[in-house]
Image (cartoon, rainbow, N blue to C red; front, top):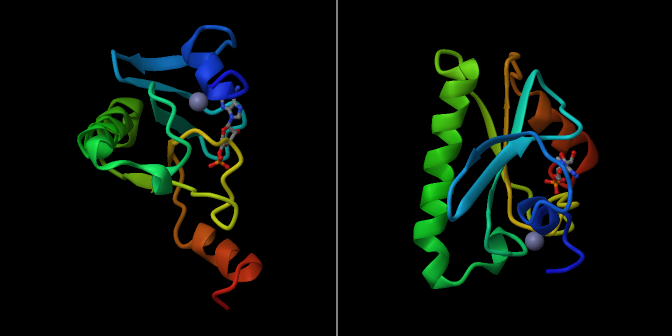
Length: 124
Ligand code: AMP
Ligand code: ZN
């Protein structure tokens, strides 16, 4: 997709701090980190969101999840873990319409993000 910033990162047209790349997957540091460790794992295939998968994408999504946890360990979060987040579409707060898994780590998050959802969302 020509106007997708993550496709531009994949194509090398925009800079990124890559932490992993193979034929199907790219992982890079979030430009606006909200925790000491904050990276994104994306498929090279342009898929708009987790809710725009086709059946043939299921193995790719499995690989994305596996790579995300592997990278979280490599980034020093093996012992204490962190939070894996996938925002989907407008109510999910997705701002970049190219499927991505966030990993947030390096700080104890507790239930803070869930509390944010409770304050701003519809679950209160
Ligand atoms: P989301 O709200 O789930 O769509 O998250 C999009 C994420 O992409 C945000 O955390 C942004 O900080 C991040 N982001 C946007 N542009 C870039 C970029 N050029 N390089 C790295 N991360 C980016
Ligand atoms: Zn894209």
